[in-house]
Image (tube, rainbow, N blue to C red; front, side, top):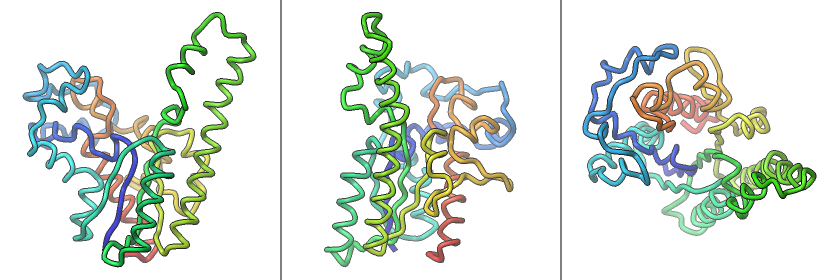
Length: 257
């Protein structure tokens, strides 16, 4: 078996090495329970300003290996006892570049035939052609109201629609090449548009289904900012484990495992 995952830093397991320096039982009440105001300092990293990737800059190779191993991608690899590919970027790049290249590889290199691909949808604003110019115009008092309405429509309606169209095209491409595509989302906006599709992966925990990371964060401590004394909103170890379980459930539903 061989699979691939693509998304943003959420899929990379960004900063999961924080868990390498604190025991799970110290965090159990915080990251398993309902929202809790009690948070822990991060040993080693607690005194390093996380500006410009400060925490990543002092992470060792062992930290980064640990990070990947406990990400949902690493957990899938261990559970399925197989190798994998993983890349990160914005939605358009992940779909148009990474997935299309993987499908071509799977079709032309028998030793690299893929069984499935997991796509994580990230923030739609990352797909703005010129983000800085967009926000400058939106914030400028000289930009006419009608033009601002068009700009917001482009971000809130046109880009999400284009993203969904691309996801549907990618799903067909994968199906045509005997690859299963599974999609989960960071935010509500895109999740709401595809939640009824067969390839969509809901986040399931204790019998309840959440449509995305953002949705689950409203009830459980799934972000680093909820368990550590830090503003980092990346998913923590607990969320990666829940997501892993949810993907395994989907793989079983599809008869892949």
